[in-house]
Length: 337
Image 1: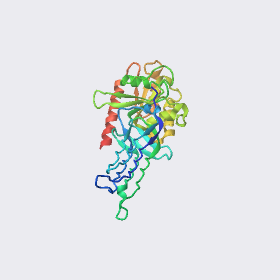
Image 2: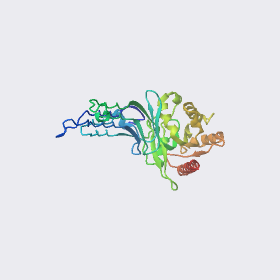
Image 3: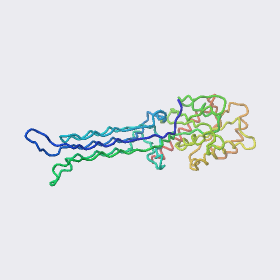
Image 4: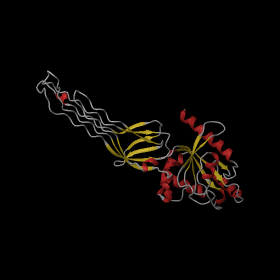
């Protein structure tokens, strides 16, 4: 299934029903007064945040959404039935904006959150509403008001505790498949992962946390190279960045080159990304050429925490998971204080 993270949809609230022109007609009451009922209100369009959804895939095939119109008023002072509200469900992390003005409508982060994105039209008043002492038999009623129509842009930014970033073929997919139940496609060539993948990690202690495998970045990603902007948007919602580096491919002269290059792309997209906590991971330590290169990397990294692992064999992975678990719990305590 194709991962969909950006769509535009048309929404239309229901129209209000028209008011009724009617007069009471009963036996022995030949000239009864007006009894036209009001029209019902049109249904609203509501967006609801649902944990059941993970992508915007359903909007590939349905782009137009219309709430029910209100029923028209009837005689005997019967008010028309209100139009049924239309609920559109979106996954957590969806940012909704007005496609024409660019104005933010809603940042859907809380499961169960509801927001009205288009209001239904009010029903028209029936002729009984217009009776006065000087006009006891009004022969007019109001039409119902039109419901709001809008074009909305939906952008999905994944919500995750840990975002794994790095150049293609660094081993991100292998790691997430080892520490979670996620099963991304894995192969020994760049750009195997072409869509973000979420995995839930269940540590031995503490609450499970969510890890996102962000597809491999390349130089110029913040300018759109390699669909970089589509990938980078998902990094914005992660709380901690796990920066994965292929230890077997480090440059002898500048071991930090790939790490610095990815950080440059993050900063080019949003300088705030560099303010997120980072944890450095040297992967593929099972390869012969990785050991000496890793030593040079650690010396160059200074005070930055560096973890050496082999996602393929599992070496060092448990230690890394414990460190991630501690970072997530520490940040949760800090956010809650």
